Length: 212
Image 1 (cartoon, rainbow, N blue to C red):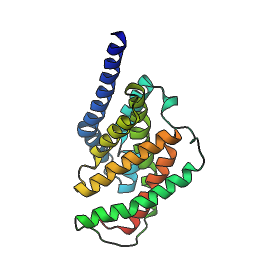
Image 2 (cartoon, rainbow, N blue to C red; image 1 turned 30 degrees about the vertical axis):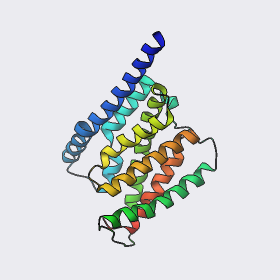
Image 3 (cartoon, rainbow, N blue to C red; image 1 turned 180 degrees about the vertical axis):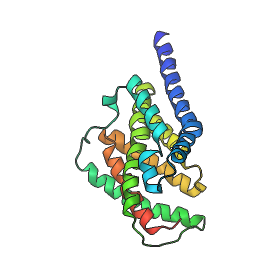
């Protein structure tokens, strides 16, 4: 009976954290982002990625992880296998044609070649933030309180989708699938860095060749 009660408490903590993430995403992060941009008179798109894009999420995720699992357990360490860097880079490349198929499915596939160094720098930061928030802090909390890898990965991927709900459905499915892949990668290598590299490679290529 006591074990059952503890299990219910753990599930309640996981549910509360997930709900907190969703509330922050829906009602806190975006309004704060827009208010800060107005306060400073606006910032370029790439600089917004570095400064304001995920600020509220970063604060909340850090506080939750600190209180519930400890900041030393959120997968910021080096990966356990050095081959993970190659896996991450290859996965990022392989996601690009899937994005192309999703864009083609909604009639939005337009090819170009316009690499943007400043946007790449902005994405390198924002992709780290996303991996830290959703596959570092949230996934670590879910693994502690749920303890089931497929469930933890799926929940973190679904919450990750919240910030991409403006995407058409085929592209949103790609976001969800990428979230699953990156979550599995983090747990496999005990580090967010290969997933971050995969995320960056995907964005660097996609932003350079697709006009959306």
